[in-house]
Length: 412
Length: 185
Image 1 (cartoon, rainbow over the protein chains, first blue to last red):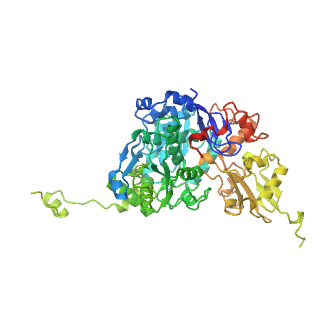
Image 2 (image 1 turned 30 degrees about the horizontal axis):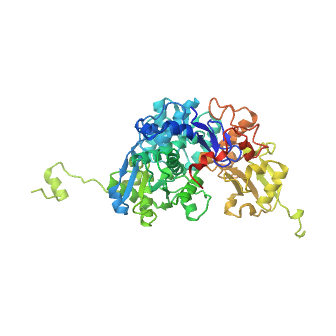
Image 3 (image 1 turned 135 degrees about the vertical axis):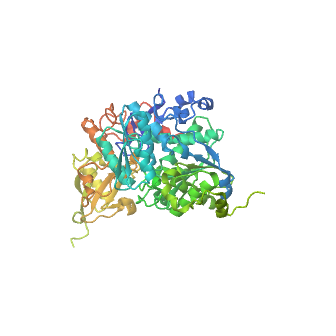
């Protein structure tokens, strides 16, 4: 199989063999997989994809693995919801929600990248996997490692939501809770990765891992009948997801599977951790790291690795980046639940609130076919909304008490 | 006042060298160089340790994007960039951002707090370990089980000597930015 040619530095173009490497030793830029699109194009067609498995592996020719997938066989192919109710509230006529709150097996988009990363890690022969995580990634690595029989270490900030901590422990990995924020965790993991022969999915496996996010774009286009959206709204943590969604759409066009996209790519951040939004606003092309302080812990990366590329993608496509407050995030979660019956975690609240904001500001046109990416399930971050969604109605087990309490009138 | 003319007004600055560049400084993690601006100091560094500059600057003469330079604790992009003035006692840190690893590898490279320690003895970034391994051909720890050496393809030995463009043109598979045409600039 020759679909992958090399790892290439995004900055200086220097080429490296297809190994567990992630950074250019010459100029320190990030490495990315270079594909042989001619070769891929010979095998890949709409029909071949449609005949594939009902998972992200239907796009295997565009994913950086060499053999048959061995981990995460059921990830992906989540619903694309025509969000008519939410669209009506926001004044958007053609709004869709890509609902990764129901990804398999751990209810976030991270199941995509982990399926790819662990399949690749196995190809490399690793027996131990690890990650630095704000929560969702750790959940997914833990679950997939359990199923794949791999030794697993996950590193998380110690102040994570209870659901995300439990959502690791149940799979019996070693969960290392680091006293610090994600950027501290990540820095520690960078050092650990230098000392142990482990597959750190978002460090030494990152060039492969990150490619898994492209499948969100592939699925969106296929589910829209092989067409690209006019506008997408994507949450920004490291910035990788946003850049890969863009890449995915453009790859489909390069292979002739869709028309050349004119998709505007917009980004969503929390005000309490919005270094990319701030740079966008200030028209800067470098990111000033911040110390995160937001309820959107899954987006709480103060020093986003791919922030520069995310900014570039947004600017090149004519999109926008906005940030929202914690209050708006909670309102966003409730709005999505109330209108579409989808319970998103805080990151989904960020995306929904930014979607609303951009619509209000006229930065998304009402006629644009818009897709918002909802990346994780609300049951993981119950703390965020626990105090603001009302309470149950308590009654005695009697019909009269029921009617009396609710003051209902019987149907005639 | 010794007058405004040259050498006496030069300032000797302590420069912290990240692990990946220590091959060029004979293994030294801290060196001194003269200069009144960041630019001056980097030029002086190049004179002392030829090869440093091409690692820090791109072909257009700009500081590479994933190279961060701090004067004391401040990123020079928030001061006057390469023109940032230096005074006696200032310390300059060269720190590669870990683009692939989502992290700022330093919090504080100065050895004042508890955390400062890792900036000195240990390596503050993952790549540093990779590169150290590649330089002594030992590579027993980092990376995959069957990974021999993290060396650029088509490159003779180590990172020194050839410029990026030269290297790339010697590769079998064509120009370096073949991936980019996914979208026009």
